[in-house]
Amino acid sequence: MRAWLRRLGRKKIVMIILSVILLGIVSLEILSRICPVRPRGNLSCAVLIARYVPSGMLSQYGYSNRMFMPDGSVDSAAEVLKDRVFEVDGRDIAGLNGIACGSYAFVSRSLPQEARKYVALHEAYHVAGMTSETAVNYKAGANEPLGMVMTVIYSLWYGASHTAPWDYPCLCGGDWRLLKTYFMGMGRG
Image 1 (cartoon, rainbow, N blue to C red):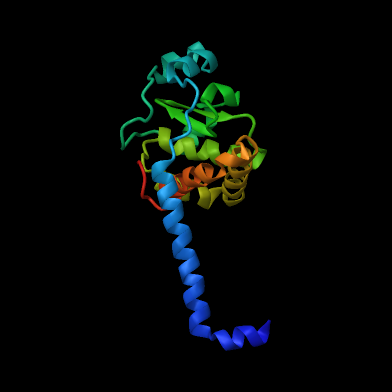
Image 2 (image 1 turned 90 degrees about the vertical axis):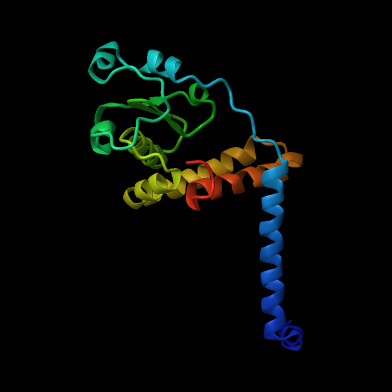
């Protein structure tokens, strides 16, 4: 094996590795554009708020089915975490890990404990006024690094275990799209 590598030369090995990486990225980019976005179930902030938020809290924080409050909200993430993040059945949030709805945030109970803490903080930052997925992701990840890693691993495992093998290429394209949005700042938000 070493003799074969020596004959090939370092420059050629580096070029082969870079070519494989480039081909992989181009393939993922093509898949992310040609594969349809996986449909989510019916998701309604109004239903989530009505089902999970106590009525007394509605009068205190208001009722809004907007996905995000405007930037510059005076609410801090710590205040939101204290009493406005609710753990919900994953089916109620259409398979998402979490969602911010106006003054409230909802997190899937099906996540591992550390991942739930990370997702709760992530959504609390949204409720507090941050709209950039990438900025929120890194800020929450700085406070809950294990939770961020567990969320990524759980999401990849869940997606692969609930997808037919022949749909894996599109699953990879969708995961590439999410990576660009949440970690590279190249998607929505």
